Length: 251
Image (cartoon, rainbow, N blue to C red; front, side, top):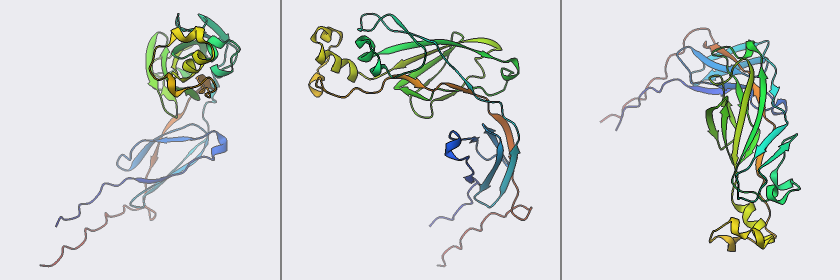
């Protein structure tokens, strides 16, 4: 038999903004003593509650507006993989919808290049600058001003760039790698392209196999959440005692 030990208090409820407003509006760190550090992406009132019934609330009146990262995007492809050396996309789109078959059936890593301007007030040291890629198929590596900022492979495709950006112009490069399916299907449709791929998995595909969405689909957005701290109190305004341990069984 083991005596039940007291568990540390932890959060059990965090209110969320309605989904139609653009997804999650608050990011919550772990409970720290009598407060909860948070980052808020939209104005509003936010509430949290812990397992011991402690509650907290904070009202955020103003949050900097999101900044879309728009085109044109210069997209470069590696040589000898069937795609052109470079294309320009005014808006982000799935490779499989491109008119050039070298892009439509491309498999590998392509690099998206663009730039964005950042006001000095939003580039201040310690201020969060969150890059949201929207949808990227399948893996994306982000480089800002020549420095690698991180790799993303699952939703939400977000990365904090606060240690990489600067006031004024910033260079952004996003390397996106997709799967091999599309190139294999393209080779089956056009035998002259077969030399690009060498694999023993071709029997799993036909010329009619569906193509998989590929590339950077976006939308790409910069967000500037506000850091805040939510103090915790019990419903009565006093600390809540830890639940007593159960009685030990009698011999």
